[in-house]
Length: 306
Image 1: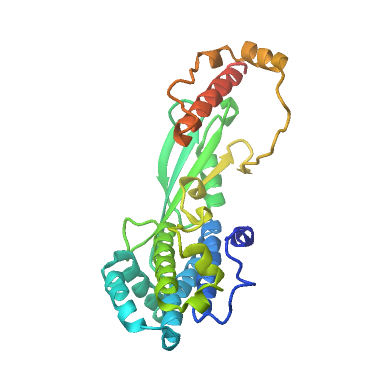
Image 2: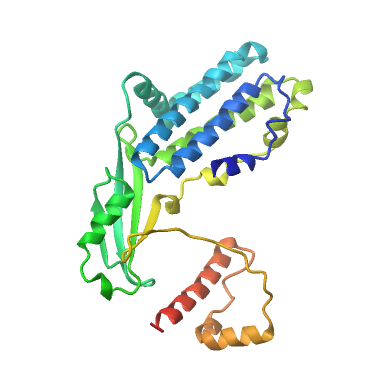
């Protein structure tokens, strides 16, 4: 999956100007992209997460090493880099990266821990039936199976869903979720590299550099797929079977006719009560809320038929 997201980066590494002295730094930053994606995708497997995290931290730490390795090819590097060093020295998460990398290389794994919360959900629109904190040293599937064994009279449940949320934290950086921390580092390094392209390259090299063409004139943030989200930290299980549930999407190209609209209105009469006022299509947030209200009506109607 991370290869797909990697391919979606807007600049072309294959056809970029490899004579650019910053090209090795570009490649190393792209390696960081891949490793953070691996870490994110391994969030629910403690052993794989540990390995991916270690690799990501060590590689992120080398970006500035590679940059400084090529400073002799960059005009005015020392004067340009000094303010960046001062900024990095004041950044709590960037300072953590240095300590974390040294810990991994010289001592062993970081002292990470995962806070896990399990919730049994029996009603789509009601409060959780049960909520608890659980030990997170085992795999998420083992946690789910253990909780399933504690639920009595499962056959009486209608929805019967188990939601498990993880949140990985390092004891060296308490209160900061680790994917969010890695993304902060990535964002900072990308900003440094963008600034290096803008200030340290000759016009001749700059005009042939795809990285500079893409990033140099904009304030582009890291790819959306790398941003830590609650959904990425959550797994759902069927309490009846113990199976992990995966979301699937598909596109429906059918055009609704007037007859279709009439049947929908008759089947879901409460939809007519949802007014468009206040849900302007010009606002993504309000538009999403408008469709969410529709979805709630559909769920309530269908659940009432059981």
